[in-house]
Structures are given as C-alpha cells and as structure tokens.
Length: 125
Length: 204
Image 1 (tube, rainbow over the protein chains, first blue to last red):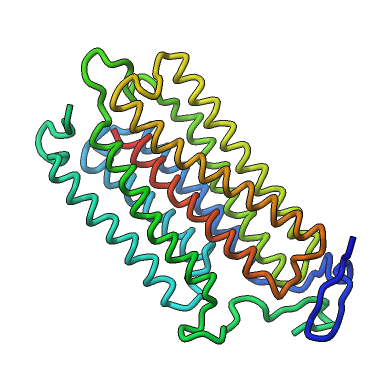
Image 2 (cartoon, rainbow over the protein chains, first blue to last red; image 1 turned 60 degrees about the vertical axis):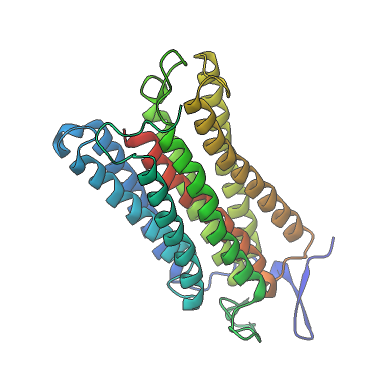
C-alpha cells in the first residue's frame, strides 16, 4: 500500500516522518492538563463521599463545590484540548453562545417546572 | 512547509484559510454543530432533572441504583481518552504518523471501555427491574445516557476510519485538520459526560 505523502510537488515517504522527535511543547501541557482533570474528578468523588464537609448532601455548599469542579473541567477541556486558547476567537464565540443559550433556555424551563422551589422537582405526572 | 532537518511539517497547526473568517469552513461547521448539540443535550439533561424521581410504585430511583465508584472509573477513562485524542492531533501536526496511529487506537480502546461500562451498567439496572418504560425516571435516564453512548460509538467509528485512512497513506500532514475535527467531536462528547457525571450521578 502507498506510504507516501505530498508537500507541494515533493513526494515524501511517510516512514521518514514516523518517529519525528521534534520538540512539541504542547504535549507536556496536555499531560499536565490531564493530571489536573484527574485531580478534579477525584475531588468530585471526594465531595460526594464526604458530603458533611460541605454542609451535607444536597446543601448549597455541596452543590456549589460540584458545580465549580464541573465547570473547571469543562473549561480546561474546551480551552486546551479543543484548542480554543490558540484558535480564532470566533470559534470560542460560536461555541459559548450555543452553550450559554442552552443554559439560559433550560434554566428557564426548569424554573417553569418549579424545580428550584421548595419541594420542587415534581414535574408532570 | 516540510522541513527536512526537523523531519516534519511544523506549520500545519491552525493555518489561516482563504475564507471570509480565516477559518476553514469544515471546522467552523463542526463548531456550529457542537453549539447546536449543546441545546440537544441541554434538553435531555433538563428532561432528566424534571423527571428524576419516579412516581410511587414505579420501580427503583437513582438513589437505589447508581454505583458511583464504577461510574467514576468510567468517567476517568473517558477523560483520559481526551488526552490520547489531543496527542493524536499533536502527532499528525508534527508528521509523526506512527504515534498518530498509536494514539488513535488508544483513544478508540478507551472509548470502547467506556461504552462497555455503560452496557454493563444498563444490564445491571435491567436486572434490578429498571426497563426503559418502567418509570419516567428510567425513560429520561436511558434516553440521556443512551444518546451519549451512541455519540461515543459514532466517535469510535470515526477514529477507526481515521486509522484506516492513515494506514492507507491517505492522511498526510496537510490533512491534519481532519483529525482535529474528529478530535473536536470527541472532546465534546467528553464535555457532555463531565456534565452528566456531576448533574445526574453526583448531585442528589
């Protein structure tokens, strides 16, 4: 099977490119971000395992701790792994507009279902 | 350009395209698609939150079913697949085809492990008496997590397609954007799971 690629008019054997060890500074950054994500996931499980440290399961402190770690993970994946840090800012706007719109629409919907009121979450039978 | 001293094409990452926005249409299209997917999954997550608790006598609820240690392990596996995916993109951007294939296979295997975990979880829930139509909770839960599982499965198929293209020599550096776009989809699936794990499994 063909194992070549083209750069302009030049045909290059891809086996020449294999194993290229050119320093690529982002790789280390990616591994560091993955470690941070792993720590944040461990924190989430920790919050769930020891809810009393955050005011009890379902308390505002407990929910806030989980939401903060969740959004930190979300931001890290989007900003670094999806290259929003380095890419054209238009892409960030396109994505975040969709994301924020989704949150606003569905928070409004949940409010309509009285999900945030005392004893809420009843929804419709 | 290909640099023979470096042995790689080092300027393929995020090139400026000859479009009004300076972004390739394919990449912009993928980001628009992902923005719309936010609304889709937002709808499914909201439906789950509204119908989270089954009515009386309609079978078990989330408190009796969820196995948090197991789901945490699954979440960790999917998170790490995002690392292997971004390393695959990085590998093709510097012309390292051998590592590209290795990272693609690793990502597909981690994704498969996640889907296998989901199948195991669904089977365990079925054995507990929770079918798709058992309660409003079960329909919302299976609908949300099942839809996410289908997204992961589609991602695995795309990864295997990239691997085949690479093996046939049809994925040179100047087409690295193809890998990046599949990577965007894969990371998005991971983002959705970050939400599902916290909102569905951890927040009571």
